[in-house]
Image 1: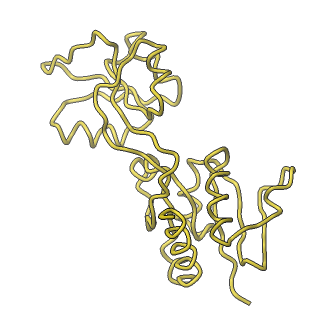
Image 2 (image 1 turned 30 degrees about the vertical axis):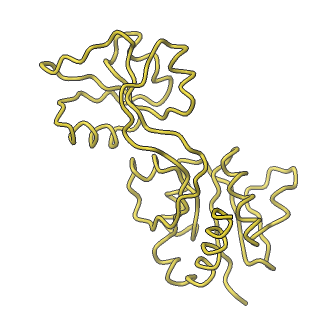
Image 3 (image 1 turned 180 degrees about the vertical axis):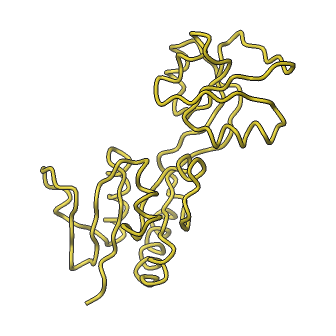
Amino acid sequence: MRPMLNIALPKGRLGEKVYAMFEEAGFGCPSIKENNRKLIFENEENGVRYFWVKPSDVAIYVERGAADIGVAGKDILLEYQPDVYELMDLHIGKCRMAVAAKADFRDDRRRTLRVATKFTHIARNYYASIGRDIDIIHLNGSIEIAPILGLSDVIVDIVETGTTLKENNLTVRETIVPISARLIANKAGFKFKTQQIETLLSRMEAKTHD
């Protein structure tokens, strides 16, 4: 019997979209659609085992081998730099990592720029690349209020529509990098299950080019 392919899906709308793509590629698992609180779903016929995890944890499950493949945002891959293979851009969950500030903010390069973000690695790399001296303020949520309350000069955050920024009188100053969902694989798992993963990959690529 062929080994099961373990697939980590991000909980939420993105994960549902991704599962639909896997299903279309012939890797469906009907029990995943049942209304229950189960987290792990298997279909022996298609050789797949799916499980739902928090989006920011997908890369950890894949890197450590609990999952052979999974789907993670490019933001997570850039921020945490997990040791995984990035197989494919799924072209969904599109947004961008951007710098935003109050409309009247003017950057005085003589002083250190205060940057509020939960993406400290991305922010550091970006400002190092433009030679700007910064002070990172690590926050976990409601980052938009940091410049309003004078905690920071700018924020580095994911921007989808920009509505939240507008409502808080903030404007995007620069786009750091475009973000989308990526299919990733565990390096050892890829060696052992190359055929299954490559079959999945080629079918998914065929679907995205349809």
